[in-house]
Amino acid sequence: MKNTAELATRFREVILNGTWIANTNYQHQLTGLGWEIAVGESGSLNSIATLTQHIHYYINGIRHVFEGGDLKIKDKYSFDFEPVGSQEEWETFLHTFFNDAEKFASLLEQMPEEKLDEVFVDKMYGTYRRNIDAMIEHSYYHLGQIVLLKKIVASAG
Image 1 (tube, rainbow, N blue to C red):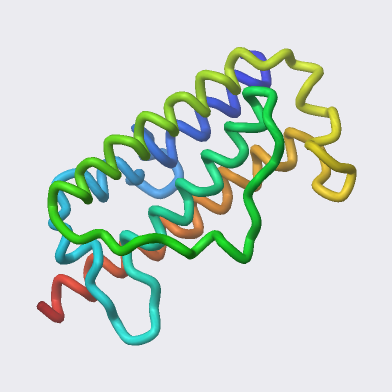
Image 2 (cartoon, rainbow, N blue to C red):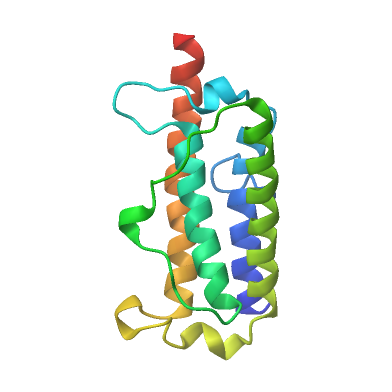
């Protein structure tokens, strides 16, 4: 299997369909989740909705670069989102999130192998491979938080 296909598979595992690393994924954790739990707060912790929007922000920012665009995302804005106000808004967001994740994975699969070792936008960001690996690792980090938050918020309600 070529490296870009392997990375796309790893990305899909954490967001869409895998169970190998965490025995779960975003789609499994979030599909069917009530918006009240998704926006539920526990002290000063970010909500499930905020963490999911945060991951989506980075997926879209990197995907935009994959499509030939500029890197427009900034860390300081990566938690700035309108609150989710209903089940319909939550489900619409999830639909967009999962579709954008699949687009990201598809673009990654189609990427020429040699692109992985090229500079990603600017030398300070490292290579495409480094940024893709970081996206996968970052997603697992927040997936773990989401799993715990579901338990905390559900038990408090």
